[in-house]
Image (tube, rainbow, N blue to C red; front, side, top):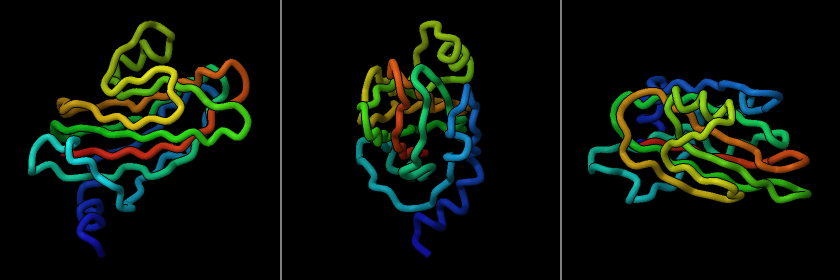
Length: 162
């Protein structure tokens, strides 16, 4: 068993992953707690004691045009999140808004009011982003399909350093 697998088996239960659905999203079925090793980026770890926690690897999901969804995340101590999304659309290139938000900000996101968060990207189709160091607490990795018609199909990977 690799060192990363041992670490994940120890710490992964500390990071519950729960879907907060909106509409007919497949994200609830897609959420996984993969323990596969992922590449790390040196600038994502804010201290030499931060450890990599792979939360999801290459999870495929679909959202209908205009749909929004979020994946609940918990940081047990201050740390950073990094996400990577890759377009998997077969007909029309997908366009999404993405980010990491607090629970109160999620309500703004879902309702269509102005929202803000960490590592926010608008109208992207392939993206990698890392939050700054953020306090311990509950957050949501949010997705909004900006397509006017059809579905957004993409894969995401998510990891945390703390």
